[in-house]
Length: 89
Image (cartoon, rainbow, N blue to C red; front, side, top):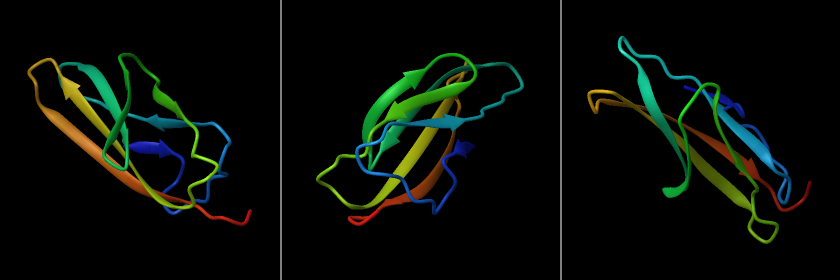
């Protein structure tokens, strides 16, 4: 589950934020991958799972953030949210 930022929140263009997520499994989570608008951003292999992202300064609008967690057996679970980076802040 993506824990930060909150779904529907406003992010500042050009400012770096840390996307954070929690993931649990009955065996163990081996990796959590992060995506922005379906583009791969990074992989986090240990808790707390997270990735740094800077919304582009020349692109306003909405962004879909996705976290996908894998366990040792190859099973996955995912969480997505939408955030907004308006032109005027």
